[in-house]
Amino acid sequence: MRKLALLLGSLVVVASASAKEVVPAPVVVEEAPVQIVEKEVIVYRDKEEGFRPSGNVGLEVRYFDRTEGQKNDEWSGADGDKYSRTQLSGAVQMTENQKFEFRVRDYNNLDAHQASSDMGTETRLRYSYNHGNLGDSKVNFTSWVEYKKKKSGVQHVDYQARFDFAEYLFNNDFVKTSTAIVAPRYKYAWGGNDDNYTNTLGLYVDIINQYPWGFGSEIEIDGANYNFYGEDQVTYKFDKTKNDSWNDDFTLSVKAIITQDTNLYSADKLSIDWHSEGGFDTYNWSDKDNVPYGLETVEFVNENKDEVTGHQKFEDISYQAYFSSDVTASYQATEFVNVFALAGAEYRNWAVVNASSATNWRWQPYVAAGFNVAF
Image 1 (cartoon, helix red, strand yellow):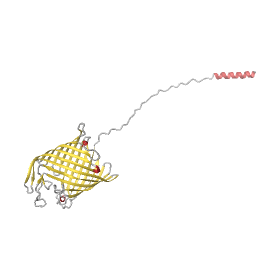
Image 2 (image 1 turned 120 degrees about the horizontal axis):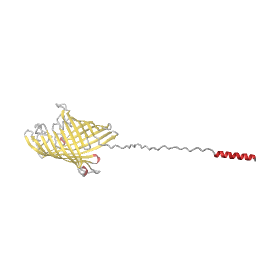
Image 3 (image 1 turned 135 degrees about the horizontal axis):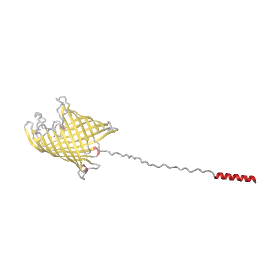
Image 4 (image 1 turned 60 degrees about the vertical axis):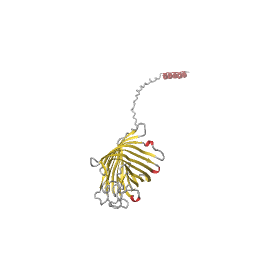
């Protein structure tokens, strides 16, 4: 019994000790304040591109060989029989509405018997301002100004108020009108002395259409003009006596041609194209008999030449008709540079302007090479 009592006592003592075990105090953790930092968000947007000036400049050297079947200067084309033409041209779109164009042509005679090779230089400058459409219409209005100095030294300034009605004309699978300009004009031309000037009031018309299979056409009336001369205009007969004189007249000049373009070969950067065109360039009428039959300009001709005697007659109509065809190879050397070369020929009533007989028509071959740079 005594042992049992001791065992029970021991259990009581152990239980008491367990009950008196020290419990650790709770740990208080202080939370740091939460700080919210807002970062600047940058949003990148595509920048709207504004107007950027653009344009092109090109250089071409063209060689015109002797007219078919002729020797030396027996047969003369519009610029002589055998000559070269170096042309520098270009255009700059200065603003969204303003455009400037230039063209300079230098001519050189290549006939060895000629005393001088210099045939003169022709300069043409053009400026246009696009005013946009008229009101709610589709008629575009553009102010157009041209300055030109011919090889002869005659200069002119031409202003045209151009109204383009192309949006109202053909636009289908068979005919598309790209240009339909009607323009009242004022033109002032002057020559070598104070009285050698002309005031012109008239109308300019240009209609360009495109057709299937690479065909196109252009009718250009340049122009229906009433001319006032500072000095009397005079024509002479072959015997050097006066034929007629006047100080004003009404003239009409019409260019009417058909064109055809065909791509013969294309591969990567190389293209070979065939271009042909023909028609009247130009057909001229005047209310005065101031056009000498058989001659392009008024001049004295040796009356002993049998082939021209009997043509001492002046008429109110003259024309030049032609057909030309050439093949051009062009290569896109870089994104902005294109080089080209071409060869072709023109068939025209060179010497006898008013004649349509085949004996008065001749071929003249030509070749050219050059380049164009876009910017």
